[in-house]
Every structure is written in C-alpha cells, then in structure tokens.
Image (cartoon, rainbow, N blue to C red; front, side, top):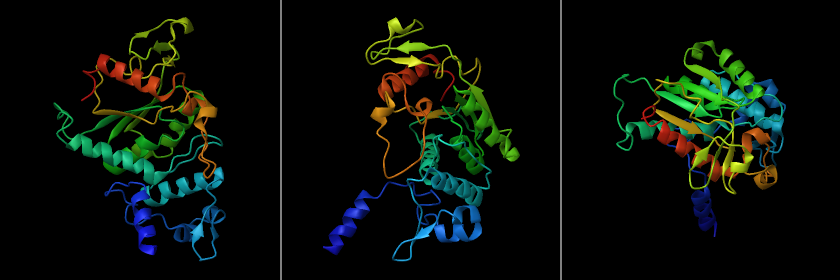
Length: 272
C-alpha cells in the first residue's frame, strides 16, 4: 500500500522544468526564516517538525515571493494588498519553456539581432514577474503592457527597484480603446452592440500596443481566465490575491486567446 501511495503522489506531483532551480531543491522555509525575520513571522512547524506557512494568508504568500526573489535572484520586489501574487517556481517554468521553444526547430531562427532575445509580456501586472525573471536569469529584454494605473505604476516601481535591469525592461500602458472579437475571430471596433455571445470586448492587447517597426522573439501572457469573479472560484486552500482586471474579461479565456491569435496574424512580421 505504501508503495502505491508513493507512486500515485509522484504521478500527481506538478510538473517542474528540469532546469528550474527549484526542481531538485525546493525552497527551504527553515533557512529562509533564519535569514529573513520578516518571513520568520509567517513560519510555523507541524507535529513532525517541518516548517510550513499558511497558504491561505495573502501576506504569507507575498512575503515568500519577496524573499525568494531577493534570496535566489537578487531582486527587490513588492506589490500592494489584493493584487495577484505569483509563485516563483511556477513562473520560472514558463521562462524555461520559452527558452526551450526558442532553441527548438519549432520557432524560426532569428534573422539578425544576434543572441539578443526580446519578449512582449501581455498584462505584466503589478508584479512584473516574467520580465524580472527573464531579464535577470537570461539577459532577455522585455516590453510589459497593462491597462490599469496601479499595474503600470507598480510594475515601473519594481523595475526601478532593480536598476541593473532598467535598460532591459519597458513598461507600456495599453490603450483604453475597446475592441470586440467574436468567437469566429472576426474583430471590430464597434460598441457593445457588436459583442458576440462568446466574444472579447476590452482594451487593446497586441495590435495598437506594439509599435510600428518593433520586433520581438515571442509574446507571453498570464491571461484573464474567467468571465466573472464567481466563475474564478478562487482556491480556498491558497491566497494569491487577484483583482477582476487581472482575472476576468468578457468571454473568458477563449475570447481573450482568440484576440491574441487575431492580433498575431496582423502582427506576424513583428514576431518570430
């Protein structure tokens, strides 16, 4: 029985990229607590002596992210209450997966520009996590876009707190002009009357945000996944925050991804 349980646990373990620094050595809460008093406040010990944190406490998850970014990546970072708080090991996976794609035969090789990689992060958020990790780990440059004042302000703060990366990361506000995109991919700039049942209606995504003559190796996004906050059904076992602007758009994930695909067709000369 014990062997079956172990095998089942191994199968259910979340996939982590082999080059992810946490793949073989997960964060050690005991060590982090001994170094960072601000994190020690959130650490408690179970009956078996293992250090833990309360994953339903937003302040605890935010402080864990802060100390991991500082301790393992040399980054200064903070976000205001209630905003979406990323987990560092998970976000590192995406950087490494993109790195693999760019090195594969799936993506056309870059015509000129040498080894310099430039990415576009749609909806970078207050946390600006992908540009910060990609630039610090691999030296990539980024444009990170967002639509709210608070997201742009705090993303710029997080970049400014890391002056060694400031030349690699630009934060850009996406235009507030709304466009609609139906489920069949046909877009328009009309009002809400042009919105289809499963269509996207919201701020500009790529087209209208990417500038003429700009070239990128990839775009990435942690998109709004839900049509409303009730649909989001936040995991009661964790607290990573998240506002409606970060998690919701009319039409949900399907409509948002459809908009990205349509914009990608228009901007096919701007991306590898």
